[in-house]
Image (cartoon, rainbow over all chains, first blue to last red; front, side, top):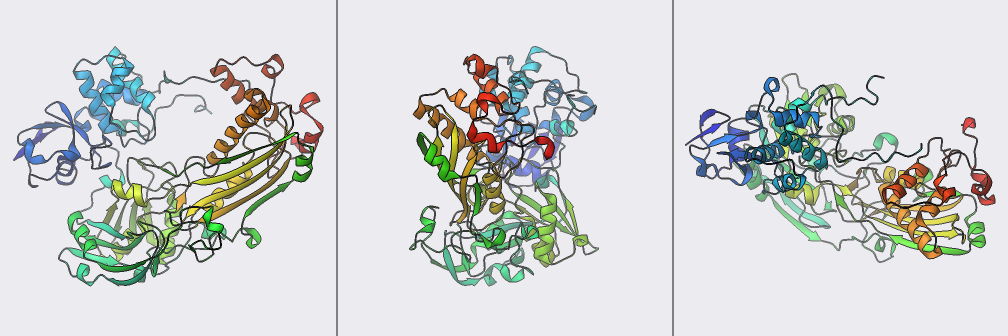
Length: 170
Length: 456
């Protein structure tokens, strides 16, 4: 069988019951999808399969003959970042970075189907993606900024819309 | 100081958003073996027989290590600070918590490693486990640890962390009422998205290259070198890229065993814990049991506090004596109480060993103290913000361990919280600052608290 990953077509040698995650990480060396739980619970392995976000850890590769897979590596390289990648950088939406690949893939699919900057709609689109650094506010800020068509200055990091300055008289 | 106040981009931001950050699990070394552990299925048991010969003979299995393969079996994370070692790297005659590693295998792939673990013959004689830290002090409680059921090696070989300040008896005599509370926050698993993982590569030079997800690279270096009994210059440790830690990657969890397997097999060895292992076998934030009795006046001053803390260390000490010490220094929270009588114990149970998590030892007492402040206000019929502001730490006040506060933030934080909750404070409270106490805010019982910051 063969699989196109980020525009390159590969012959897959793993058996049909190998997970897409295993094939990507261990056979093809595409390491941005993470083995966070291998139970479909955390979202860190999410990739686009023919444009739809799927949990790579739960997907047997045998079902995907001829499919086209996109990972974060396929969204844009450092010298040609997509608006979503720029937004995640500018809005400080990646902390430890381990959930970031899955978050960005889900966000990319949301934006491509015409998602707006409505925060509840973004939350719904990212539901099932766990960020244990609890950086959700900034992640939602980043996705909303792309939906609005903002441009981004990558030499600085944005203030977060969801944070309030408690102030005080220290 | 160009960085202060500036919104600088992350040094690793572009790598994160392009999928190029190399976590330990992303390092690719040809010929890498997978490690899997035989872990105790029981909370407490004696190991009556162990035979790994079938596993060792399996095709694709390159090494099996047990306690017998560890040059220095017991080494404590805080040995360098004089806290004695109590935990074997791999269980020898007994297991003290469910999930404790007994043997680790390295094989060609994950499936073979799992099959090899299942092929190890082991027999255990189950014992009654202990989970309740209050039960640990009963004469008929199961005996958990070689030192007894609580840690006995504080300075001067004391069996508790103790703080005495002022005269609690005097404070309780003068009090209008005593407000008591018991607070029991539970264990919390850190749940980093990246589970525990290490990769150790034996180099032609005889050195070991260790890729670790540790938050505490120099701890790992010291711990691995001690167990292996090799000088530090035999280890090259690569770290700093952590897929979430939150305190749960301070303990050296997997690199030492990978190092032993790499030495024994001559091959690179990787061990990535499953999510199930992370939940069941990795260290957690400790459960705590805190009893507070405060001597208070009817107008809301706290004259004195008696407190008993039991800190659940799990099966071994690890960092718990240090965590309890921090806890004791902070046991009045963000408030100044002049007369104190604190006893804290590090208690052993048959839970997983507990460890640091975001504010090690302090969040427990912050929770207890803040809940207790509101309880005091309830009992006295006073405003909870005013009770807090009145007793708030101010410049020149002293902490339980007699540190002089020079930069306390209680007043500004409590006022900001009131603002955030749309609570309007009475004018004299709204005008309150953190300046040194005087006038009505310096009642007789607090005079002994005041130090001149310039003397320190």
